[in-house]
Amino acid sequence: MKQNILIVGSGGREHALGWKLQKSPLVNKIFYAPGNGGTSENISINADEFEKLIEFSKNNNCFTIIGPENPLSKGIVNEFEKNGLKIFGPNKEATILESSKCWAKEFMKKYDIPTANFEIFDNAEDAKDYVKYKSAVVVKTDGLASGKGVIVCNSEEEALDAIEKIMVKKEFGDAGNKIVIEDLLVGEEASFIAITDGKTIIPLASSQDHKRVFDDDKGSNTGGMGAYSPAPIITDELHNEIMRDIMAKTVAGIRREKIVFKGFLYAGLMIVNNKPYVLEFNARMGDPECQPIVARMKSDLFPYLDACVNGNLEKMPMIEWDGRAAVCVVMASHGYPGNYEKGKVISGLEDVSKLNDAFVFHASTKKFNGNFITNGGRVLGVTALGNTIKDAINNVYDAVSKISWDDVHYRRDIGKKALKLTNSSTNHSI
Ligand code: AMP
Ligand code: GLY
Image (cartoon, rainbow, N blue to C red):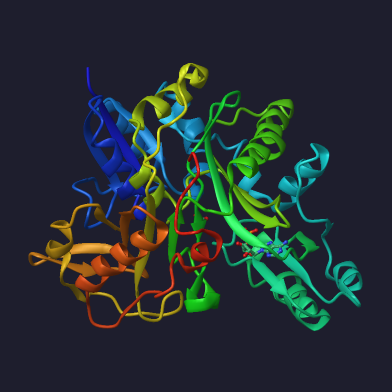
């Protein structure tokens, strides 16, 4: 019997996962809670309404997939499992890897996983003492702060200011009761995401996000303004090193802590002189990374998610990938991640739907009077494939140029970093 799916979340990540799963011969209907303008079977239940989600999933025999971190860290998986329902994602205990940076850093130290040197503080005076005479540190809130609780400081003054904001003015609330202060690493970032059932690890293709709002990595941090896959910095050799020294040690360590981790395990890495260091873990798929990754995935995704939930991922072969590159450009509202207007009519989507190998995944859109309108900060992700990263960049910007609305903002340099590192070919296995 074909499986019904319930995807919880409303971003480009959730639309892209649903688009990929819809191609599976094993999948029947896909429901999105609450979904967005681009997703079809939307049900009006929010990601934090666990009881309603459980009831819907029971009544419709769904296999549920959780996109965002908040419901995961509040224990949605534990609640579904108590009800005997199939759900893909880590339980509350396992999300500590993402929800407490202090816990994650101590964990990495204990299991010898490469990461920047650090100290943990629970009071501002000691933290201020520690940064005296230091020219560069990174100050991080312990708890989740929507990606804003990380402050890169290039002087003692900036570090003192960051400590003041987090610990004294409490700008991030209780998330800042404890902080990590770590060495600043200088290198190239990459995202390494795998599916794990707590024993077996199946890597996904590498990728690279662009967090800053403006070209050349200027301006504020955002949820992500674009991504590409593969990340050419991750050579086959480095891939093996990351699997051995980071992913395998993490999964084994988590098991030794008596925690069962099932789901997407995401390591945000800094590659310094060809050595990988963990900047952070996430207990979920990345967004926008998910978009170029699924665009390149040739294998059926559903059997991997199912095997993960059943705890028998070891029976699955490695995932097959399209050897081409994929680039995703996020089209956002002018003003994001600050204030912006909503309700602008989006044009040109039909033109892109006629292109081969270019896909639009919606994030904050809504249907209104027969049109799609903007409904938030990150509005759409446009993803295109190309034989090389350069071709994929050309293809994606060709598609992006067909879509418009009043005051649209997007970066013009997504993927440019990869060009520095590649001789315009993607000679990686994944
Ligand atoms: P995180 O949420 O820990 O991944 O941090 C967000 C961003 O801050 C990362 O994507 C990096 O760009 C930057 N960052 C975090 N930690 C460091 C570090 N130790 N050295 C340099 N940059 C960092
Ligand atoms: N793109 C970064 C994240 O999903 O956290």
